[in-house]
Image (cartoon, rainbow, N blue to C red; front, side, top):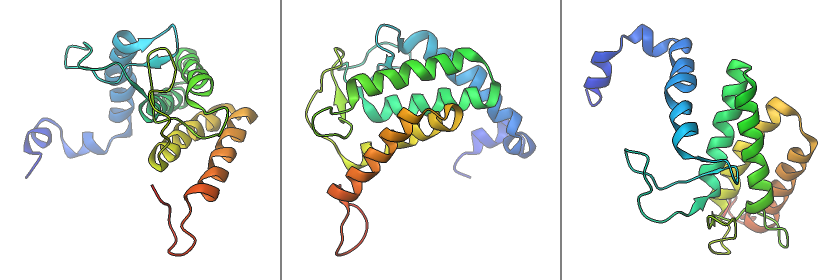
Amino acid sequence: MLFSSCYERQSSNQILDGEYWKNQALLEILPPWTKHDFDPGQGSFRCNLDAKWLLNGDDIRYSSMISRHLFSYSAAYLMSGEEPHLEKAMAIKNYLLQYAWDKVNGGWFDALLPSGDPNEYIKSTFVQVYVITGLTMYYTITHDPEILRYIDKTNDLLELKAWDSKLGGYFD
């Protein structure tokens, strides 16, 4: 078995227990990310970290990774009802809207400098879809009409710019 060490430490009942995974997310995963990596000045997360939570390489902020955090803190609020998770999700959402959205052409920049400026003016299909995923979870818990507008604008851009009308699917 490929993951024998994981299997040996956990019973199959534990692996299938939703409470186990909820506790993993709320007690084991999010607290260290919040403590060691959240940038309260901007509402984003550093992305290139080592096992000791130290910056390992550049300090580029990736919209897709930040959106993953938006999804995670939104899901944490959904599971727990604890306001700090909602507050963190709101800070992350504010960061994405302020810095990651291209206010001239639309779409989400792939990568940002620590200042919030685009690292490059690249917007890949993967990142567009990944950011929508985080925004959708946030919208699920808040029903914020502004977020729905960004989801719709992003979907419209994907249809206009990335849809392959001859073969179906999306370009990247």
